Image 1 (cartoon, rainbow, N blue to C red):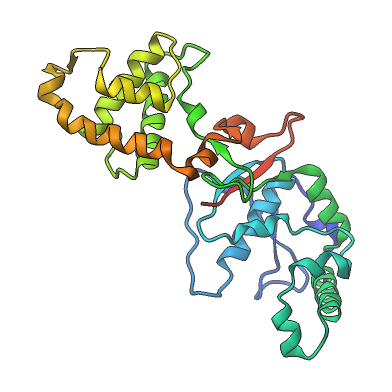
Image 2: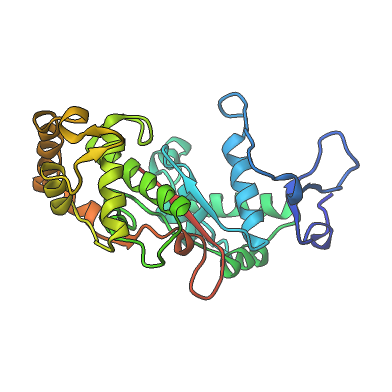
Length: 292
């Protein structure tokens, strides 16, 4: 027995299915207030972890909750596969044609079977195309691909622009740490942005330039590494803390990055603006899978 739609269309109640040991047809609702700061989903391979997390994300979106989704495996792009009319032609581009061959049917027939499978399956859980339409109408989903143009590229270099809102010292330190971590990541340097010598030196450059209202790009950063705009870090002279000969290795790495044909993808696309990643201009929640 499928639950009535009204049983689970409640604000703050995420519909996850039905409990196997509960009353027949009673929906299993997760109270969104129980999602506080951290959670972990564990289980054996194939036990449904990804499916559960996708359901939680979809239910959250329909309640107006946005999400930035880090997707190293490429599974969560399935959030875009939402077809309200559930027709075979919607499924046709996404089927695995080898599956059709193994089943002894044409790809078109296999797509029709998949459409029916999903239509019947959703119906058995009290859902239909109208709910998919509501999901599509409530939220938007876009795949970001930093360092690639396969999806929507992210311009990480623009993250080095001086803050326009003159943040206080604490917020400035957080922004500097984020920028330094991103730059170290681009260079493939696995140093701690807060505790390492590289992180402290780059952080001092960013802080000095941003407080003066100066934007930075990689060319300017190279110049500042070679000719720092200050004489000391902490109580030590620059040459004692980080000698020019050793800094030159970072200069070479940055220059190699600039000269790389693949670097253009890091310098294109949307700016790294978390607020824009979370909501559209009209205020709708955005699901932003970031696939590396």
